[in-house]
Length: 156
Image (tube, rainbow, N blue to C red; front, side, top):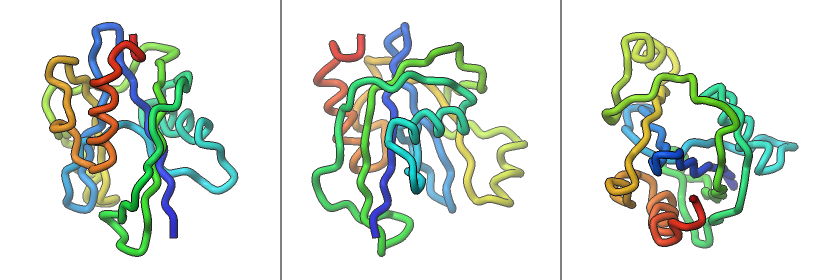
């Protein structure tokens, strides 16, 4: 079974990279914002929907950056193969959700939600100088982080 994931690389005017810090079923994960493709949905539509759902943020989906080109088993379901697709994105409005400065800085309300859903997330920007493949958790994200750092001019 294939699990198709779509993620956005958003770099703001201060040259900071947006990441999502998530607690999923006991695992702490820092990744790029995005999520799962739904049946009948295109990849760009998926990414716009994910940003709206997760951040209440309208984005413009830009250039394709990377699609997984190797086998990656899902960390959450060993019967699933992950295929991840990454695009550059640009915010079409100001970000309204709370942005954190520290990893996994969940508030009390979020922790209550976690008790019910076993999933919570928060967002933060990482300065370009501090951003690297070391700050993201997922193997495919690490590849993309290296691509982003190597092609800095694409994001300015």
